[in-house]
Amino acid sequence: MPQMKNFITLADLHDVAKIIDLAKSCKNDPFAFEKLGHRKTLGLLFFNPSLRTRLSTQKAAKQLGLDVMVMNFSNEAWAIEYKNKTVMSGLRSEHVKEAAQVVSQYCDFVAIRAFATLTDKVRDEEEQVLREFAEYASVPIVNMESATAHPLQALADGLTIQEQVQVKKPKIVLSWAPHPKALPHAVANSFIRLMDHTEADFVITHPEGYDLNPEIVGNNKVSYNQEEALHGADVVYVKNWCSYTNYGAILRTDDQWMMTPEKMKRTNNAFFMHCLPIRRNVVAADGVLDDDKSLVIEQANNRTYATQAVLHQLLSHG
Figure: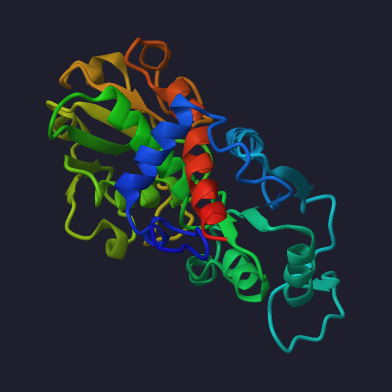
C-alpha cells in the first residue's frame, strides 16, 4: 500500500478494506509481525480518560514489538498553549511547538486522545490538538479519538461486522440513544465514514434536533422514526450524541429511544453493537446487552487488531 504519513481519520487510509483484512490477519496470528517494531517506541498522550483505547493500543504495540510510553496530560504534564503569537502569562506554560518537537525526539510514533469541548464547534472541528501536534511533530501521529473522529473504533467495527454478518448487503442502522450527559459525535461520524466504504443498506435514525454534521451524513438515509428504521435490520449500532445545530445541547433525556428487546424484535434478528462504555438501562436495556446477539465485547476485542493493522502500516513505510 502507498505510504501513510499520519492516521487522523479514515480518509488517511488508501484502502479501508485492505486495512480490515490486515487486522483480520493480525487477529489470526498476533505475533506474525513481532519484529516490525523492534527498538522503536510508541508514545501515548491522553488528554482524556480511556479504558479500551489505552489497553488495546498498548497490546497492539507490544504484539508488533514496540516499546510504549504513556503520559496523562490531565495531571502529569504542563498545560499546553496552541495559539500562535500569544503572550503566555497565564496558566499555560508550554507551547505545542516545543512539546511536539520534544516528544518526537523520544518517540517514533505518537498516538493522541483529545475529546471535543462541546462548547466551541469551530474549535472542535478544527481538531486543534491533533492538527497542531501533526504540524510540529516530526513523527507520525495516530488518532486515539479526537473531537470529531474515532477511526480506530470504526475499523474495529468494520472487522466485527465482516466477521459476524453473513448477509451480502446487510441493513445496518445507526440509532441515537438517550444519555444523561452531552456526548461528542466522534464515534457516529467515523461509523458513517466506515459505511461509505461498506456495501450495505445504511440508515441513520435519531430524534429531530439531533442531526449530525450534514457534510459527514452526505446522501445517507436519515429517519426520525426509530421503530420504522429498525424494521428488517441485520445490525443495530446504538450511540448517543449531542445536538449539532444547538451544539453541545441535550434536547431530551427520556427513555423513548432506549434500545429494548421489544424494539430488537422488529429487526431481522439483528446483531447489537455499541463502542462502550454503555449505561445499562439508559442507552440499552439489560436484555439487549446480555443477549447472544450482542457484539459489544467482540468489538472491544477487535480494537487491538484494528490498531495493530494501522501501526503495521506506519511501521512498514518507515
